[in-house]
Image 1: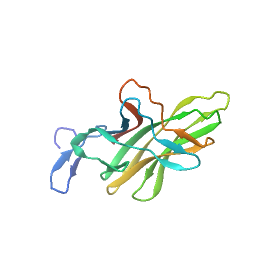
Image 2: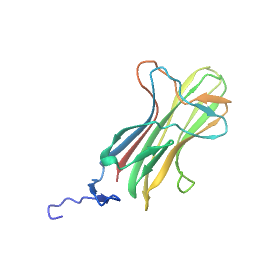
Image 3: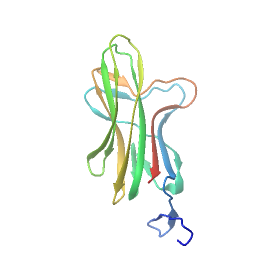
Amino acid sequence: DGIGTTSFFILNSAGVETDVRTGQLIAIVEDQKAQNTAAQALANATDNIRELTTIVFNRNTLVSLATNRITVPAGTWEIVWEAMTYNTSGTETATQSFLYNQTDAAEVARGTVTNADESSTVHTLSTSGSIVTTIAASKAFEIRHRVAGAASIQGGFPGNMGTEVYTRVTIRRV
């Protein structure tokens, strides 16, 4: 471009160019609930789709959110997520979150595994993950969460201190 800086532009369907620089924060999407509102229940031995309710930040409206799915345009993206669990069963329970490409019906990346043993009856744990992925066309992604052990656990603990945030996804241009 003549000044030593490379820019990346996305052209939307209306023909409008949007400058998206490498490393630029593109979006933050969360599962937000009103103060003291419980998180969703997560069923045992199931790939639970985590609720995503709010776009907290959306640079140039590059992403969209509908029915717990984040749609991201073509490009190379760093996607980072964190999902909470709250277990009161007193049963050993393992959980793992993962990024799922709903458009292509394919798992993209697994997150960290968390484990609560039976020696304590209450556990609040966080599982997280990240990946750099390149997509040739717009795709819809979900955060899924597998629970193994307890019949059902909650997707987080309501702290009763303000807005409850149980899942967070951050997207950056790479």
